[in-house]
Length: 200
Image (cartoon, rainbow, N blue to C red; front, side, top):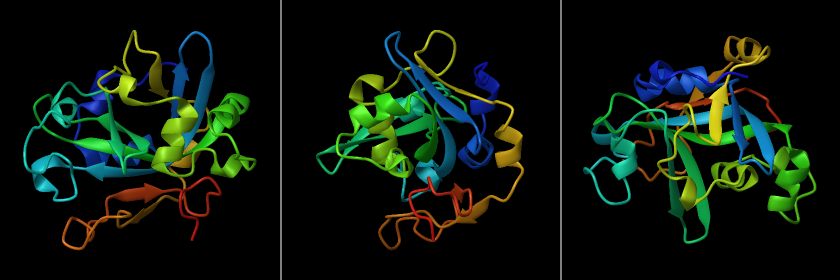
């Protein structure tokens, strides 16, 4: 599966988020290969978005979000979880797409090993922290490229259009405080997907 081009990511987060639905996130570090089909994502738009880490400007934590599009922005949250985003928009513009949930495509055995105690495949990557753990993404993955030379990438396959142009719901984002962009409908999800973080 060929990688998506830099031009794909060099757009605003809303456009990129919608088009990521149905695409396949792949990670191959030379030892293990895993992949998930993206069924749920959320857009975050920097200074335009009080829910974004970059709303108040660049910090050491958010520097990656201001960098070149087509890279991963991976952050630590709640003192225990990593979450993965894809940086988009032109360099210097702070926008990213949070990868909220994926349907396992390759390497389920590896994902189960990375998520001990999980026995239901539907729960392997159903949520941003679960997805990151299942795919082996952590702080070492921050600022790494999804373009040529990177061990992770996003691709389209023969099923992408079926997901992307099928029924895709647009809703409010999940888990934001009141007044922090919780009213913005910047979440996309495949309705009824058993692999989404919330299936209602």
